[in-house]
Image (cartoon, rainbow, N blue to C red; front, side, top):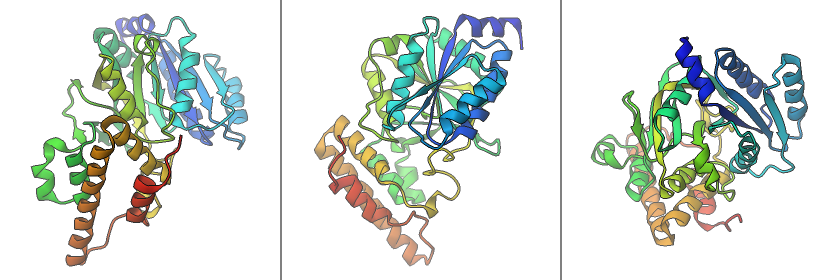
Length: 328
């Protein structure tokens, strides 16, 4: 790595926040990848928030920090498990106490930072002063690229997602929530919270996660709030992070269709639409998804093909996503 790249990392120090819930082994591997970055000149400090794991995770992480000599990492114990956003907010508060940090980089426990990613992220944010939120490129567990960022969810986007039908997907392509990126840095609506950096100035203006989301959709809401406050959201292709998707939550991954989707996923989706668009729009989005899903079920039946859905998907959508009392 060039001296100039090293200098850039030191000129734009970053505080990393990792929220742990019973994933101490994964967090330890993530910390090891960050240690490599520090040895390459990246100006990093790390806050690990343990979300009241009660399984020995906090003690295991404390021991690893001492054993490896990672004095740049700090463990913060949350008295409750309020969800991902709540844990991030706690970590952000601690990160802002570091007067040198120019940004806070939120990383999932099941991520590994690839060599040079921290300095590339620092360089991008230093060169893009209106970038309040920056998402990095992600790799899958096998090293294959996962080059996606996202449009904000819409009624037509929900219909396209539920239909799972090629002609409809082509017709509704510009409404599709997931957008495949072409390797260029580009402004986008929102980025994956698995690896997302937030500029200090945006946080100092009060930008925080909505703690009424337990898990999922909180980063979508966060990026929308950032844009409302006048900040840009960017996808940056050069900083690269490996993400073993679903290892920390179990909701995504290769065998996700075999497991029931947790109720909080549907509740978060409902909160996002109702909070940002109102009840009528949320109902339209719900009906669009239901219509698309029913079309998919009939299509699979006529083609005599199996359904590739988690158990009880439709009934859980109706109950947790529309009828159950909302969490406050």
